[in-house]
Length: 148
Ligand SMILES: [Cu+2]
Image (tube, rainbow, N blue to C red):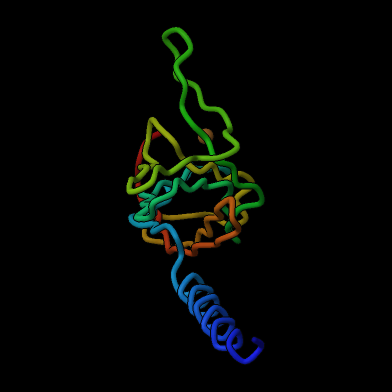
């Protein structure tokens, strides 16, 4: 009996290992077209935008962003209250399965507070996006002119 079972468990182990390796090879989301709005002179804050694509079969939540150029980063959305648009922090941004979410002026965005250096058009900073399952996706983001 033991001799007959052994090959089965070897096969099971091999499949499991192969699965883990392929999971480790590729992040579950793709972050492209990342950019940072050039801050208003004298104001140590700005916003960043990007396109987040999820090619997988399950929705994925973005839960945070970090960067060396800012002390605090938050995920924000714009909401309408009466005739006014104002922004507020969100805990996560859900990217649907086989879908994408565009972080753009007037919608979802990343807020950078307590900027540690002046950012000028043409500068490049690194943004690291974190998913709820712990993936970290590092992307370059160019500083450009733009409006909220
Ligand atoms: Cu904001």
